[in-house]
Length: 134
Length: 404
Image 1 (tube, chains in turn orange, yellow):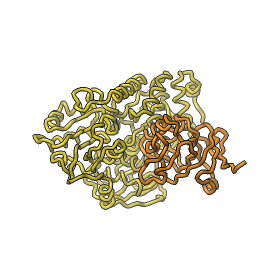
Image 2 (tube, each protein chain N blue to C red):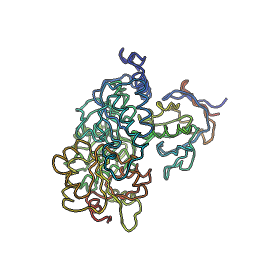
Image 3 (cartoon, rainbow over the protein chains, first blue to last red):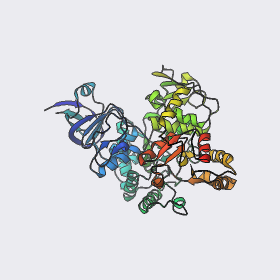
Image 4 (cartoon, each protein chain N blue to C red):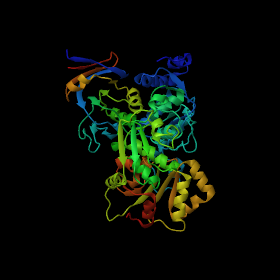
């Protein structure tokens, strides 16, 4: 049993997958649907795959359309992230996650961010309000 | 979250599956932000985009039988009649059908088919203090900052849900305490025209996260300049609200705009900041040659169409010029003879259309000139290149085919 942290549910569901961390905001419009690779120039995650990962990032950015439409295209190729852990939720990102039915949580303690690393297997259980690093 | 009897009934499906689905999404958003309740709205604007995800969601609501309680105005896709008449660059059958389906879906939902991204200038203007649901980059900050209305930075989808349910969760910018500025932005740059406001809006990285309070701006600021500022603030960052001291209604003084608190940050913006951005932003061009000029992201006003007409009257453009406007501005331009002047010079005045649409397929690989960073930002994804200049320089470039 790994280390468990309490969190706050934004979008329901649960998932378990390797983690990928971004310190920069994310716009799903800039992720290539065919393989889930971040295409945004000069982005910290440029060239990396976010498909089927637990994406840990500060928040979203961009126009009021870009998150849900970006996720929709990823979903067509089954390349959405498995779950989202966010620090600063905004309505555009939140609506996108709820509509595309991706588990999303926030309000993780500082200790979680100090502990979690890329490729750690992370369980996100939005329904029961916890995140576990395995 | 505590719902009224009617809202609870809606959530449970007593007003149909579509309304229940919309309400479920909104309750989810409300719970995320700890909203205590839902409050009624009488006004909404949906950033329809005619993208795949937009159509999928609109059709999902249609299939579930949803109808808008509050008829929202909507953003542009592309104008079916304009691009499928005598247009020399035929639209792909698939793209045509996609727009037709978007049009059908929003018609069935009961939206106002305005296809315009600047509703706050003419067709959908809220009152001071009015709670509403506005999506679209330039629209949310405009209704909050300029009109003093109250809307969160809705997504296209959440604004459509609000139109269906007739209410929004009460949180964020709906509440007094969240509308105060916390970043002072001292503008030392010379804000000559609406173009400089485009550049100011692109300073999101310098301004940082929060609600900016601008000082040092001119006494008179045009609707076009305010439109540009909001549009670019949400291209370079995410801003639902800002203040301009001595100009916007919730900022009679710096102290009031900041709610009596100290700002978390102070930023100075100079001419050099704006120029540095503009220089870096443009794509490469060979010998200054450009293939087309595009304006209207967000939609140009009647005044801007007239401004261009006055400068190209009796001349011939060297390259195509596309001026994107609302159908209302188009009608007025037609009545006033502006349309004819533009057409004779070789410019197209196009209603209901956005630069980020498949109708511009024939511009892929070409280089255009525009005064709007946002006009360049999204179509670049499609492989269309842009040079950024002020409006006068863009008009000059359209007359000669070259940028200086």
